[in-house]
Image 1 (cartoon, one colour):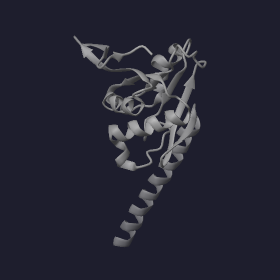
Image 2 (cartoon, rainbow, N blue to C red):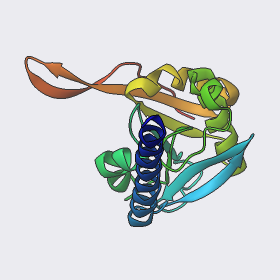
Image 3 (cartoon, one colour):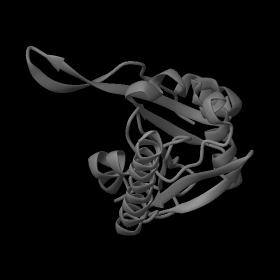
Amino acid sequence: MMIFLLLAIVAVLGAARAITVLEAARIEAAHPASGRLVEVEGGKLHVLELGASTPSDQLPIVLVHGASGNLQDLRLALGDRLAANRRVILIDRPGHGWSDRPGGVADASPARQAALIAQALGRIGVERFVLLGHSWEERSHPRLRLPFRPGSRGLFCWRRSRIRGKAAWRGTTPSFRRP
């Protein structure tokens, strides 16, 4: 009797695993990476570039999404509109969307995520930029600016909040400088 119970448990767990693998493959096929995978220390980050290269007087805008999201969130909200006249770079944070989380839990800290994003930007040749961050990511954006202090020209972090029962977008850390 005990053997049948164990076999039934193993069969149910095996079936659940197979369903999970098949469903993940179906979702990945339906939603392929829209950008390119850029090598960083221990893994890859998903980076999507929109718009034309900007003249030297117009800095590219780097958009980094918040928690529980991916770069498509900001692409739909802002990316395509901003790309009408600027170069826009969207990045999936480590462990989100199509990006790896090379160091596992160690890469969950804002400082580590900022370092990996800084590596990806450096690998695609972006030295000067304006950075827009959303939600949880506002904690790592000031850290991201540190490696690029001479080249970073602006930082704006915002989050969606509720004001008098209505959803609103609110800037939390604007600090823009002209190049």
